[in-house]
Image (cartoon, rainbow, N blue to C red; front, side, top):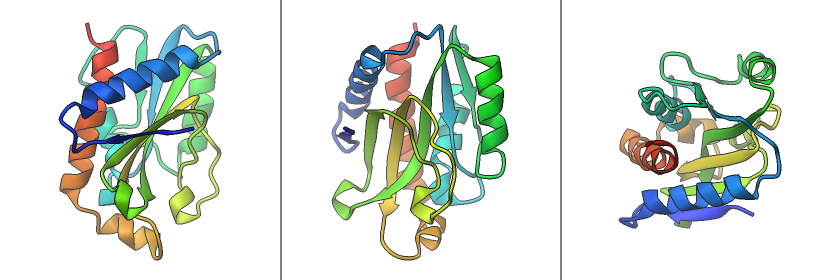
Length: 177
């Protein structure tokens, strides 16, 4: 069951931190490190939420935390299989937290969802990609409906950056010293 966080609330990054901690504690997998798998393309405004969060997180040297998917090295449909294979080999005991942009209802525009379970990247644009992650975080960047790919291309950059900043602050609320 996903948790929804309204990023218009002033304490939304603290709420994200709290819910992420709750999801991590509920997870049964024995893990010794955490991998943030930040999915999306830097070439489509609405899809760059993941790479922007990855870019922001990669600025911090957090012990036992690894980040894949940044603005310079995005993880997207073309390389997703290779990156997930690499993570499985290099980080076999990692808890994987997948981050991606999503489309949703008008009432949830600007919300963040967090939950236990896999994320299904590309679902909004009917891409057949494997589910990834043990925990997911999504930012609802625009409204689902018709012409989803065009919707992602015309998403406001300010919406994406605002969501990504709040997600990053929430994550850092758990992992920074």
